[in-house]
Amino acid sequence: MKFIKVEVSSNIATITLNRPDALNALNNDLIVEIGASISELDKDDEVHGIIITGSGEKAFAAGADIKGFPELDEVSGKALSQSGHHVFNQIENLSKPVIAAVNGYALGGGLELAMACHLRIASENAVFGMPETKLGLIPGYGGTQRLVHLIGKAKAMEYILTAEMMDAPTAANLGLVNSVAPSGLLIEASRDMLYKIAKRGPLAVSKAIESINASVNPEIDGFELEMKFFGELLASSECKEGVAAFIEKRKPVFRK
Ligand code: CO8
Image (cartoon, rainbow, N blue to C red; front, side, top):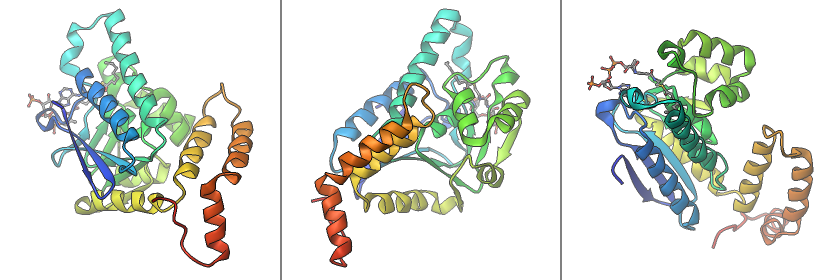
């Protein structure tokens, strides 16, 4: 991989965006690398959860690579937008939990990447924003949709139209991030959250992700899907183990 680093330790994979000199700006090759590594990690039973973070102290990702924009036209610009959508949808629909550990600027495409993750933990110095209108653009990796789902239409409208940035406490108050951690403890806090989830039934976790995602997909009846999955899970060996463990007053063993 040229633009990202991927490490696995103690069942958690960490994908680090690795263009610190460009504040981890997202070029298409970097996005394709994320997609390829996510596919591999999804197949790896040793990996129970994934963290995406940025290299350096300053940025998670300061957006799409603006320096590549002058070469783009209507057709190639839309194609790059579609490429980002494809990978970000892949992250959002992954059966394993993905946390964005936001260690600095998460702007434009960087914030869109963080929003595609299932959970977001911000360091105290993180800064969030959608500055595209300053460039005469709009978000192009799903931001007009996911920001609305996360913080509501009124605030999404405000932040996208004004291009104003917000600090980590504001992002937490708005529900954009799940929690804020001291800068030096960001990865530890993200790992702790993934370890907690890894103790739960992995099939239940994957079905919960799919059901929750259905709530913002107009093509799927999320209530129907929930009822279907609930029945399927009740009949699963995972649920039998979880219920037996409760009755026998012991911890469930969901993974071999
Ligand atoms: N793209 C390319 N290079 C960048 C980017 C970026 N998004 N952000 C920062 N850099 C580079 C700078 O050019 C600079 O490089 P150099 O040293 O070679 O001049 C280096 O990173 C450090 O940046 P600064 O010197 O600007 O650092 P500051 O601390 O002064 O400022 C900021 C930090 C505020 C984050 C500032 O860099 C900034 O405003 N960056 C741009 C933020 C932005 O507008 N992001 C949105 C981009 S558009 C987008 O994301 C659309 C997504 C959808 C795309 C769809 C398909 C293409």
